[in-house]
Amino acid sequence: MLSDRFIRNAKTGVYADENGLYLQVYSTGKKAFFLRDQTKGSRSKKVLGHYPTMGLAAAREAVAKRKSGHVTRTLGDCFAIYYEHLETQFRDPEQTKRMFNKDVLPKHKDTNIDALCQQRM
Image (cartoon, rainbow, N blue to C red; front, side, top):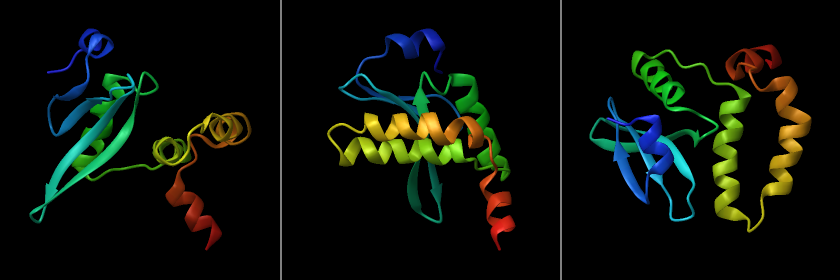
């Protein structure tokens, strides 16, 4: 089982917690929480967030919500996933991250995406 102390000092690799929660430590030193799930015979891996932006307690809470079927998706969640995509596509994604962090997230970080989509319909 993971602890905050272990996560701070973890070396490159993948470490299991409980209920399908894992920590992946990349060779660059970045750390990400992900949920590994198996549905209808196929495995999936969903990134929940990056450490230290998302703490261990928040990652466990996110897993519990997903397992219970109650998932509230916010723009902040989506940007965390988008940042992961930026890391793989661009050499220096920091400018894009700064723009979102400055202009979009302060106002809309906790905006519920499902509610936002229903307003637009």
